[in-house]
Length: 285
Image (cartoon, rainbow, N blue to C red; front, side):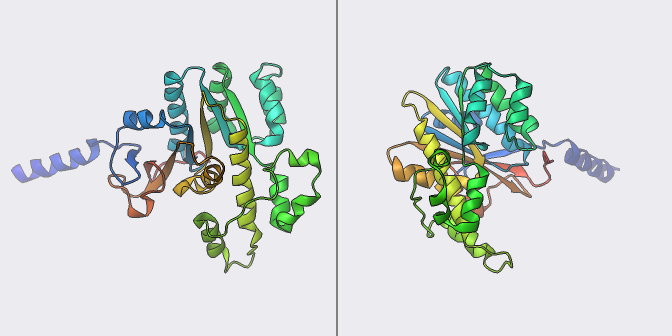
């Protein structure tokens, strides 16, 4: 009987133990408190939150980090996002200034399919608190030009079009690991195109350009992007450091693991802070 009771207790314990949605680690794999991370981020000039696009914890973290930094810096934040293209800045500004309705804004912006669940809360937070929101990404049609014609294709753009991309010529270093790995991974694909890394670099250079253009020494800039664009302090961060090595930049990322109790070695140094989420986490799409 005692053995049966003990076995039953063990089964009950397995069902009642905590099931956390995430664990938070620093770049070295040490568990850290959320509050400690916020204190560190509050000392940065630019904060990158690298998301997994369909991971709900990524989007929750973006919103919570922004709200908590806003409490510490009322009226002193600027937001920016990969999810909005630079030629839509006017529409974003008009909505922020209450010149157009939410319905018109959502109809005319080229919004991602998951906008309403994942990015709308950030935009509405910005509007409510009079925070400037910057559309940092290159219009996708110009990234497509580079994918098909290389950087040379940009020379044929009008001066008006060039307002929405980083100044030419675009600095491009194939030894930067994120671009080198992309080319390596796709080399054996039947659809391999060496320009794919160039189009990604153009996006990173453009996002860096618009961050710098809207940087205010009295405000913190929070940028939301796919983790690829800021992981390992590469991508956008590489371009930003190239222009402004003096900036204090901190990064946040998300990783999915089978077990979240320890940071896997492959994710160490991926970012300054890493949200580790169970692989079984539901997706937003």
